[in-house]
Length: 382
Image (cartoon, rainbow, N blue to C red; front, side, top):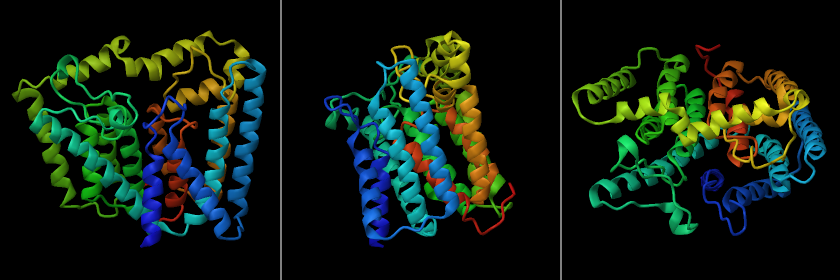
């Protein structure tokens, strides 16, 4: 039990990427957690790695070294060393974390469930404090001095877009959705914990959160071993039925809000940062950079805010190296007996604000490899 509490705390602190201190230009909690789990496990035992796990680690290091060299060649004065270190540290985290927890499935699932409960608790406290006490509780500003983007605007003026311990609803929804995704494919069932996470994502009023929550509900029926789940099925249809009634029988402007976010992309800061700006920037690159990328750690004023995973790959690695990365990753996933369909489904989250520079990326990627390769029951996805 003590190990479960230790792991829960580590995983929770890794997700606290929004607690970024500009005075030191770092989010300390994920980095410290990385170092703790790496050094704790290095000194705790002698390592005998599976050759496939070790070979994939060698591939990652080689791949990132080549991309770093490309970055220095293209922009020697615009390299962010801290970002490069974060990627190599993430690769090392994958190696250590996989080795130590690939046989501790129950412990890992327990800790991921508690991480969801902790985050949804803070999300709920934020919602209740606003609607019951008219107080906008901003957890980030209390510690970092930076304000979260939780105030509703436009059609949602006078409301709160709760994000809990994150700086915006989109970041909250992404992290909770990915953890929920991993738990659903691992457990082949959905409990009150996953339902709480999904509902909080939907009612964060982030468009990505709404889409991810619907995606997760229907994912459950694809991976569940019990196709006649009489507990979950009514909950989902009652939930959807009330949402439809909300649209058409009340004056609540959620429908207007969603239409505005989808059809007025140029006025949407999040959509512009994650998609429109990267596409515009990618079009300006010469043919060599489009093929081979601008390189790892290469930053400029135009691309410093690339926030979606898919465009981070394309811009930093180019078409060629992005293809190489995914082909080799798929090859090693097969060797590690990870269900490829899980991997393909997980790619939907690359349209959210998660990239290989973030510690949470490496945590979720490694958890997917562990839980996707240790499932005893058969899945509808094969």
